[in-house]
Image 1 (spheres, rainbow, N blue to C red):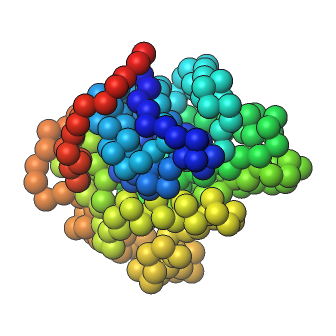
Image 2 (cartoon, rainbow, N blue to C red):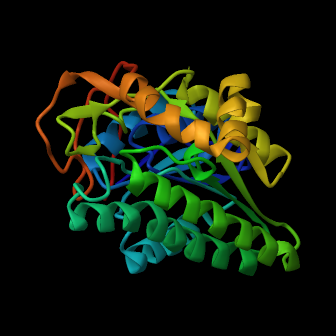
Length: 310
């Protein structure tokens, strides 16, 4: 499905593909680039949520908006989407990869299939997106892949083993990619690694602790991360991390993890249970690990009809 509101001057701005675009950081990034007149390609598993974001982007002035439902775990499907984007728009300038899922519970209590699939989404899915987009960037001799990492790619906390495992692996993969694309002038790989962000990922997460997750303070708005993404696209850099975006609290967490690990390990459990787990009970569930789920967005945009084609 494609939704469009095009003009020649808008088309010159560029084409950006965003995964995880149905909510949170992906949605905020889509809004930002729509306001700048870019052509936007929205990717996530759920078509209905993407259609809503597409309408929001059209209202904000996007040159064109293309909805491409895809599960990033399916590498062939990701490649097909990227190929279609290049055929439709003639180029792909930026890919922002923000698709991710979470699971709460100790490693031993988390069902193996939940752990495995969450890691597949967060890490193998990232590799699939990188493989497809960087191949295009190499061939066209320009392009920028921005990976949304996490503070949890630098520290570890209990009850989030799936996410920590994935984000540590993703940080390693991103560094390797940065080293390898040095041979391709005009091709860049960056990582934006925030701490807690006000998105639905916590409430949508799988859980076996009888409660949902909750973003521990300090909590940033997704628009802050979207602006950080735009900053590294404008001036490519290796990593824009939680310290740069959020300041002292995350800086102390990173330093404590590295410098006083015994003290960190003693404190992180109680602090995580107090600030990183919701107070209200919730039935244990698989959340959105295997399938997309719909939750209310943090902000609403007035809906209006737009022309669509399939």
